[in-house]
Image (cartoon, rainbow, N blue to C red):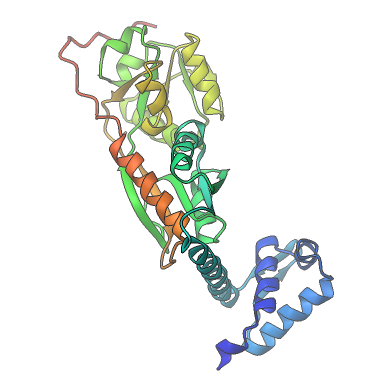
Length: 320
């Protein structure tokens, strides 16, 4: 059969070219000559009778057939890793590597805390955490570069299994001595009179916030714009004003009493979800399965209760 002739070495070389976009770069990573890589790729193309790459001036991109073969190769490599991991797990869950990819907010406190707690039960488990943009998290899972993805999403993704989905509305965060901290929920009009620090426009929280402002005809002039959430949070903690966030990002600080979080009562502020993602159809290694279940429980059981609107009279917007 044709499938039995797809050799491991050829697939490994081919997949490295897909990852790097270059024969020479793939050869460097594999520590072999470029001609060896070229021969293996050419042999696969001859075997399958189709071109696997589009040769471009700035590198090589997989063709439609190349994309299909790359998906097959990735799954084969992941399955081999899973078998090795499960054999080791027969002696107990003493070792294993869990590769997690997440967007920035989850990596500040939530994931480090959850990983540390997991290792109190399974101290031999190691983690590799990579922080990227929300869309790049899904790409890493699809490419087999991450076992688990934790990200924000607004739509379904093909070939992704969502292991847990949690509504993640935009919230306002402030110091506990802020004027608005008496209230469990606020409107954009109430927030409009106070200094605010905002993430940049490519951030999903900022995008929903901007849509809400547009619908209300409000223009905010932020005191600070930054692509680093910890900077925004410390601006708030030092008395600079308000900011916006997702609940999981600030959950630990809110529970410790360092920050107050208020629901923003506006249409569309809830049109975003936290997703725990894995590759569809993949059998996960034992260590990954155990951590996935633990992580799902942390997201579900420790979620902050949704704010209940205050019975106090809503204050009028502060004049600018």
